Length: 287
Image (cartoon, rainbow, N blue to C red):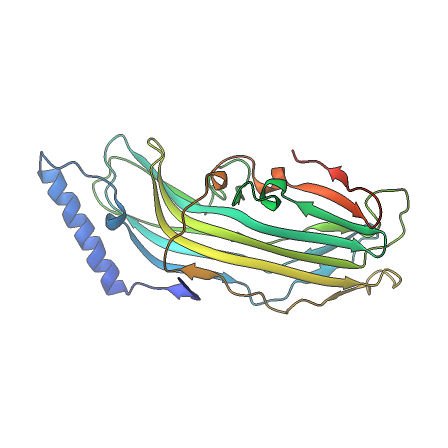
């Protein structure tokens, strides 16, 4: 099940109670020789979870004689987390992991054909998701505001906030991407891409993962182009003005293995040229 939510909020009084209980539990462990403190899901408090896409339209840019560019609104996610005391010799990172689960990205050039960015393993059903990490901070989406790391021992609960944002800002050539002609021929740009974003606590030593929250979101773009018009007046946004808002799921979804490791979506994608007549051609291979 899922519900369409903008924000899930714990009242300050409830958060204070949770902090007190966590602190009390930590004190009990410190005073007891037999107690071995352990980070568990029931000891982690998640509050003020939000996920949204900016209420603004995709902006189409026609400033270059070589490429059309478009900038989508931002997807944004944020959450407050209270972690219990972390034992000695343990390090926990809390943050956002994101994966692409579906991508259709076509640039049509009239009767000549279309180019398409594709994720072959995802398209062919060999994997359920592809990591959308920054390519450095696997498995995390990024390593600035997206994550916080806590190294034990800590004697009291740690309160933290993690946030992330994502949008599209690609370039699409006016001319057919294969061949010698530089004449504008682009007539349509369509994109439909889906993601799952997880809030996770990860033990960096044992690799134990505690799933805290799951968000699903989607971004769609549809641009009609008349290549016979002068630069600056060719493109018209025909997709809906505002994007559908993300879903904060009531039941968490498991993280597929490919969402946690290389390659990420940017490295795995391939640019294909699919002519109306003739076999498809790889224009840019995967990295």
